[in-house]
Length: 332
Image 1 (cartoon, one colour):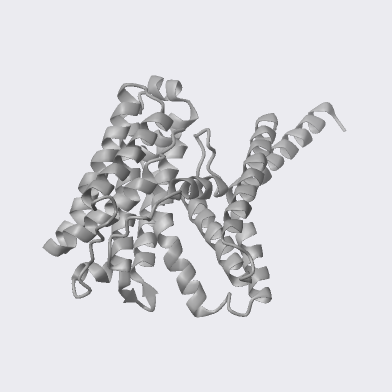
Image 2 (cartoon, one colour; image 1 turned 90 degrees about the vertical axis):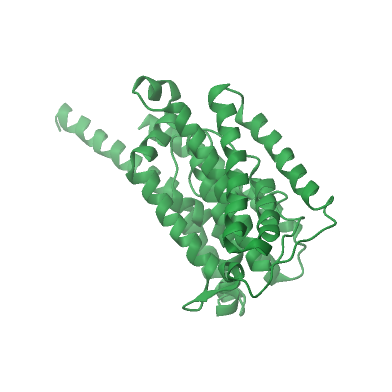
């Protein structure tokens, strides 16, 4: 065999290895979800029932909406620790605003939560403060505003079950809950925005190399402000939908949701360092976390804390696998 033939073989092998690594990074969570669901279906009689699947879809939808916004943030190389508190604030504002009509119940949480996200983005993009510090402060501020509105959590605002707003959470279409349909539509729009628009290209460019993106003319500051505003808007919307589903603004919700959202996004194949991510992967990551929780509930003899232990262990494995795959792709 000639030298050129050997080099060509090595080149094709490297390219094939890179493609396999990319596929594993993008679809590994989906394979794990399918295997886990298959095993659970044979192990538990009630897992594959319609009621359980419907419950799994409904409880996943709210976290999924939050994770969608988190995907854009992490792809830029940032982080948003405020989404759990913003989620709770959005639910309380929606429940309070529902007494003035559906329009107020939706627009009020979006306006307030969007403003919080915009301030986060401005501080991060214009003053170059660390996203961790800025969003941590926003988390505390949003939780403080929510507690102020509810008299330190003593007041729970209820939603009139005869209003149109309630149907956004409790309504059904073709036997599927309205929040599931809304979540599906949002993820479809998010996938198109991230993969098929100039804005999505800018998001990837900023996450890949911020300085290079600026040299290429990408609007770095505007992109950061947009993704943090989008993250807060989606967290507020998820809170509003949750309030419509529960018909009340529950003040104790949202604790730790930011960590669940980050875990789901990373499990779905998005790199914490930025520059690579998939909207569909984040949805799979949410479903995988919720499936683990559902299986632990099916077992019955295990405490719910095991869900956190399993999820944390799974996240560590995913991050190690991502790091290994990324190094393999660079070497290839």
